[in-house]
Length: 251
Image 1 (cartoon, rainbow, N blue to C red):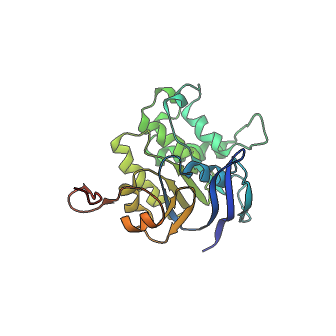
Image 2 (cartoon, rainbow, N blue to C red; image 1 turned 120 degrees about the vertical axis):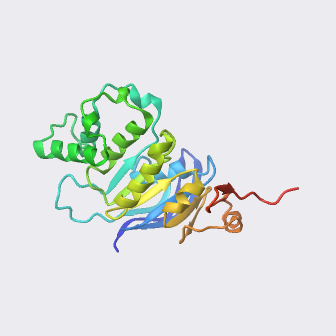
Image 3 (cartoon, rainbow, N blue to C red; image 1 turned 180 degrees about the vertical axis):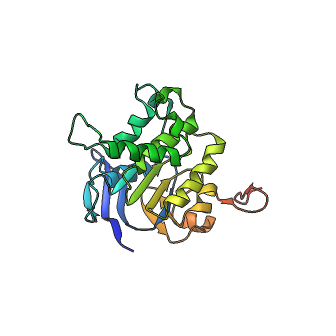
C-alpha cells in the first residue's frame, strides 16, 4: 500500500487567521476516509489545502506522484459541493466530463476520439449515457451529481475527494452514490467530507474529526466520548434494525 499524500505539521488559513492547526495526515492507496466536524471547523479548508487551492501557512505537503503510463491519469479527482448556480453555465454533459481530462495550462482543449469514448463509457457506467448531449441546466440534482462524479473520475485518479456529496441529490441517488463509492474504492482511495455522520460511518474505513485540529481515528466506529475527547461536537447516529439517533443524556 503506497502513500499518496502526506500533510506534516500543516497550519492553514486565510490572511493571518489560522483555521487549521498542526495537521498531520497520511492518505494511502485503498483508504476510505470520512471527514466530519462542525461548520466552520476547517473541513473545507482541509480539502482546499490538499487539492492545492490554497497554500499552507507553514508545514509541508508531500505529493507522491507515481509514473503514470497514461497522460490523462491524475493524482487527485475532486467532486466539489454542487448548487443550483452550476446549472447556469451553458455546457453539455459530455463536455463537463471531458473537462476532467483538460490540461490546466491550455486555454482551449481539443479532445481526441479515445478521450471522447472514455467519457461516454464513464457516463454509461453511471447510468446517464443517454444524457451526454443535454445541457446541464436540464438535469435533476441527482443527474447533475452523477455528471460531476464522472468528471472527477474520468482521469482515473489515485485519490477521489468529495466535499459534501449528498448536499444536492435526491434520496434515491444518495444510496446509489455510496454504493458506487464502495466500488470506486477498489480502484482508488476516497476521502469524503460530510455532515451526515451516521450514513458515512457505514461506508468509510476510518474517520478524521476536524475542528481547528485534526484527530484521525483508525476505525469507522466512534463513540460520543471519543468525539468529546477530539473536541468534535458531532451527534452520533447509531446503525441498527430501526434507524435512530442516540442523544446525549439530558433531563
